[in-house]
Image 1: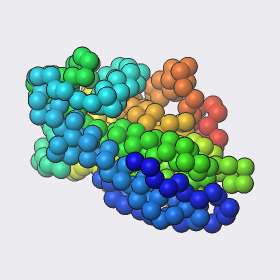
Image 2: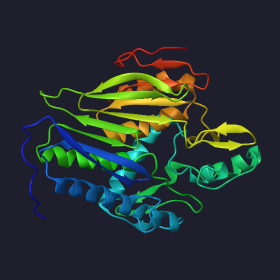
Image 3: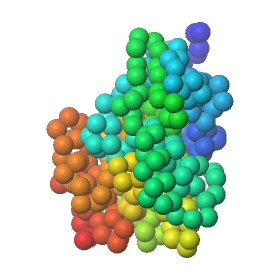
Length: 316
């Protein structure tokens, strides 16, 4: 379908629209000279991806894979590409980050269900048998997971969709824009007239601002223990599971700067899932393949950052 392109940029005033998708508020900010219909085009594409690929969408390809667990399901090329990339990135975390961890999320009451007791070791170990991303089999245009398994797109689909929107913006000649997807995925594209976007990064542990980042053609992704936490027997548990231990991670916050929203969100979730004393070692391995810098706040409120993170916040 041929659509009218947005007008060339001649002003540094902006306008924005916010809509609720992927279970969060997504705000897109564009130069004021862009037509309002252009927002509709962008959000329509996000809605399409949400509808067709979100594991929480009833008729999505991922939902069909989950419902047909134990058998192969025909999917489209986009689904194959998505799952292949997720599997590749998962290998950095030696099983701690696992997109088939839904059975563990349900066990801990982190999927909209309530539990009254902390799961026993026996229950955890039994549930872990259903969790292994390496059991996602891809043959041509078909995907199969084992019976009892379930793929959860919560850690990557929103970011993947934002990357698609960024590609469209750039193809349409937009060189200055910002997208904030629920506060956990924030990306800016910039030109010489507007060299960066200023982003205040909150300290989840202290309920204050940590620092201000200047985003220049980068994505800031964060995973944090906040409103998604669960209280069981008077103890707080975060919503990100370490699939190796079977327990929710005790970390408070991870923030990453990357060139891709998808990369940033997956890696932030994975680095949050692992023990805090493995953060820098694992991040260094990732840096052999990707440009990424970041920080972590552990359970005690101690902070550490990678060598070239733009703000030094070491506090151990």
